Image (cartoon, rainbow, N blue to C red):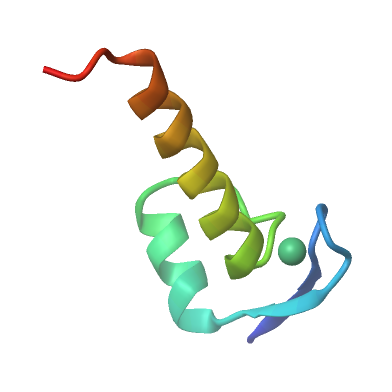
Length: 57
Ligand SMILES: [Zn+2]
């Protein structure tokens, strides 16, 4: 069954589909707490930080 989760960051509801649940289970990930937009934003932020820490070659 699809689950509706409230995003921890922005408070928006998002659907955690059965298919995603199966994927997460197979990877032994815990349920997501953030919507896709927030996850993408965090990912981008992390990538930007890492890029800033590494001197350009
Ligand atoms: Zn969000």
